[in-house]
Image 1 (spheres, helix red, strand yellow):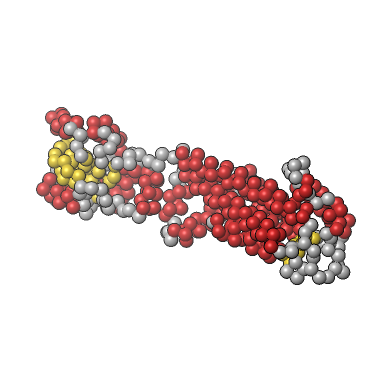
Image 2 (cartoon, rainbow, N blue to C red):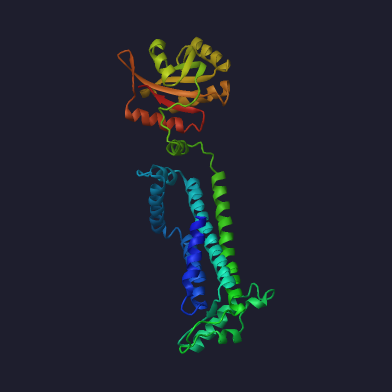
Length: 379
């Protein structure tokens, strides 16, 4: 971004210098360097002010940015962009403000490239400055007025950087003129440098700081614990739910929710190999058995190394599971890993849940806003 902006700005100055006469047309410079930038800013401001009326236009811009992001991240299916755009107003605002800050950072270095190369040309080359027209009076009056307007911010403290009427008249390139231009005058190149700093660089710096601040505020409004945030994290990290990179846990409490009847001997290999946990206690909860409930509560009070909630795929009851999750967090603390293990009982043996059940359990666990909770499925 930095080198690209600087390089384009430097090439703009190089192109604007007419090598045949060794000079630069100040009107062309103002139109290309300042006029183009302010045209873009005015269009962007108008689009932002009327963003509700131009929703379809913003959709097209977002689609274009989404295509660019997919190419940049090699996310051909667009999962990352979809997660962000569907994640609510704050993630979308954070991304769009960040893209805006990148655009303004590009503009900052575009102007830095222009200023540095123009200064380099003035120091190392006999570069002259001129203007030309076939409508002398109209062009002269417009140029004088424009120079006066642009120089208002610094004319009182740096009058040497303001070409007067005599200088403007003296630098008009006549049709019969031939040969190279004399260097200067200094008032023109000082004026162009100051105009680029004041009307090109400074607005970009202000907009860059404003966009970066807005992006940080939007990010600060996100707790990153919602369901779509966890799904986005998995996409960014390239981690599948089936992967478990945590260190092995010894002394884990397994809670059989609803008394599914899964045998510990059958489930133990999966717990050891896939979930990498060693069950130290196996209790039943959410059943009409006060004794079993007391034993489960007592086991939770011992602060186990982790908790595995073993449930059947068809038996998801969000209110009951949410209450159970809250009970676990109250008893065991917020740092204990909680692993939901979902399986279906078929002929006395555990089987993988259906695709629909898997989707429902994923949505539920991601909605708990618990970074230490995850769901796994028997396979």
